[in-house]
View 1 (tube, rainbow, N blue to C red):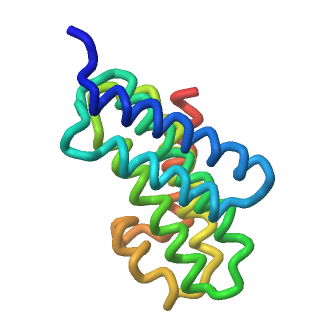
View 2: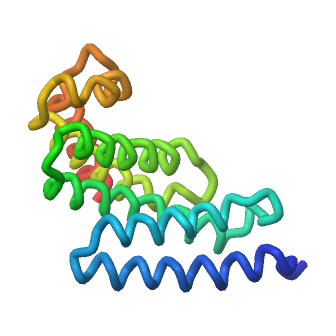
Length: 159
């Protein structure tokens, strides 16, 4: 069957918002780009939207990995360690959502691992106090740097 109206309109709007985000990203306005991508994610994850629709899954995967990219990029320009850590934390959470998403998210797996590796790598350069939350996500026992290397290697092996 065809798409229902709610899914159709969410796709049209989210695609436009994502495209606006891409323009901002290319100009180096990373935080603004992230806001656009997050707004697209919000549109696509509403209960009225068919979550199994292949185009929805695809756009969602792209927006989540784009948020991660924008958060990693913006973290390097943030003056306060805590703000940078929060941006990196968001990047990791979006990547985790892709990696745990199954279904059609598989094709974004390498990109999500790569972005998560980048986020852990950037976080390893921050002060310990700022990265407590990230350390928890990384699994505690492994250092952020070890976790970054692990994710990046896995992403590269996937090619």
